Length: 238
Image (tube, rainbow, N blue to C red):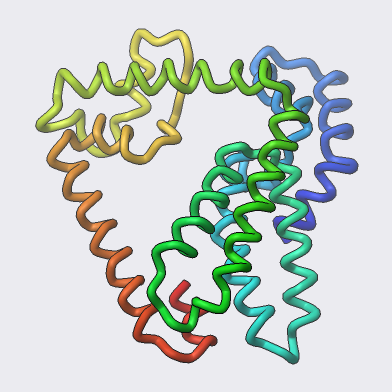
């Protein structure tokens, strides 16, 4: 449903919403108007990168189901194509960098015998993601990309500066919005960077604990993936 809405957004939704904003001007809609004019779909997730991140999580599972569920293969292949088209329409550079890196890392580091025959497909996925990344950079233009990256880097530097004053205790859970926007020109409700938001709210000890928990979880997933022999179960573990 999210992908279908993403297509609607691309072909019709942006024009309709921009026409509504033009007919009902609001000084607080400037940021949203710029996002709509960029042509980068986000479905119902507000930000294109958030939608792209969700698609990256879903696409490998859909591909695995398409391979293993023969009776429903046409349905899953259609869903895979729909998700891939939506991912491209987000024009998310970070998403395709992540997809390229993930394919290379898994193909080169996995020792699971069940995956050896699929390494060439993973390399092909990485190559396709890298080619798409180059195309998106060309479509969006370096000036546009630089303009979107610069404010992000500036906000990251501000978060690091804030965390220095309470590096051991943080400012408390849920305090990011208040702390960051005090005496700030730009407004952020969330950091859009989990490690930095955790560092600001929970301090360095809290960040270490969260990263250790994440590492433990990923390690458990990898171990379960290796010892799970049926393709259907491997898809579920993924």
